[in-house]
Amino acid sequence: MQSLFNIINIPLGYVLKFLSEILGGNFALSVFVFTLLINLVLIPLSIKSQKSSVSQMRIKPKLDELKKRYGDDRQKMAQAQQKLYQDEGVSMSGGCLPMIVRMVLLFSIYWLIMSPLTYMAGADKDRVSNVTTTINTSLSEMQKDYKDENDETLKAQKEKKYNSAVKSLSNWKLNASNSYELSLIKIIRANPDKVEEILTEKQYASIKSDYEYVIEVDKKADINFNLFGINLLNKPDFSFDIFNSWEAIWLLPIAAFLAQMLTSIVSMRINKHINPEAPSMAGMMLTMPLISLFIGFSFPGGVCFYWICSSLVGGAIQSAIQLLYGPHKLLASERTKELSKVCDFEAGQIKKLEDK
Image 1: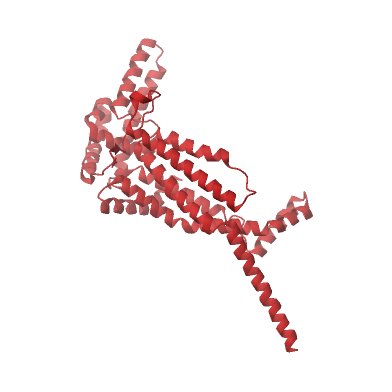
Image 2 (image 1 turned 90 degrees about the vertical axis):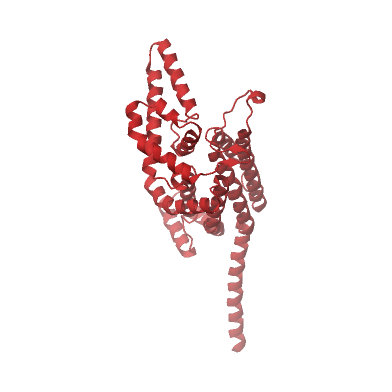
């Protein structure tokens, strides 16, 4: 799967880098334009998926007849169903393929945007990975060391040392490789010496050359992570002591929640308008916004900003497709064409009779 993403990431990475260059290295603007372009490119796939749904609706009465005719005979039912699909020119997996392609692309784009050093600054991926992997390994070893300690006093001391190291590295989040580059950039710009302080002499020696290279690449690229005064490299740290702990970056997870909620409500209402008999999706309407909120408070602001862009841009385009290419509109269009063919045939037969 990772190799598949790499194949997709190479050409898309050039597009993101190009956008970053022409937009003056503005991370937020580059991400927004990139998300918009990709969603526009995916429109044909969304339309194809809609048309596939229409085809399924069109042959549903015939499928219901086959179920009544063959009952529990699964083998005959499967053969008859396959023949029906062939005769009607309908693909059994027509609606799945566009969805799979879309999901693979969106995961790939997510990885691209969360790797600005590699895809926007043009840094060597392996050299960046060597730095982030070494930092992560060091912190993982420190975490394991205090968790495996049986002496409570030593355990508390080691845990304090680990927490201090994590905090000094801009609250580095273990097992979150998709946001390591954002965290690394923040460390480089805030206090680059902290990396050497938390690593062993041997560990630092193994990344010294690559670390200095990454610092130089970031300096040269000079990507701007500022969004209306909010640093997208920062991670929102939620606290129930809202009045004393409030930070402007909290607005991003909240905006992500509201954006996904708006998208869910609009999509649900459009579906209900198109098909009043459609089952209610109230549970999903709240699930996705809550996921957006969780992600927003779990990763750097850059991740959250992409989630906002993806929800608003993707939701707006998908809603437009639902309205313009809704199942009932397409189904009515297909049935009109079928009736037109029948009328033309009957008109031809009447003309033949009149000529006789």
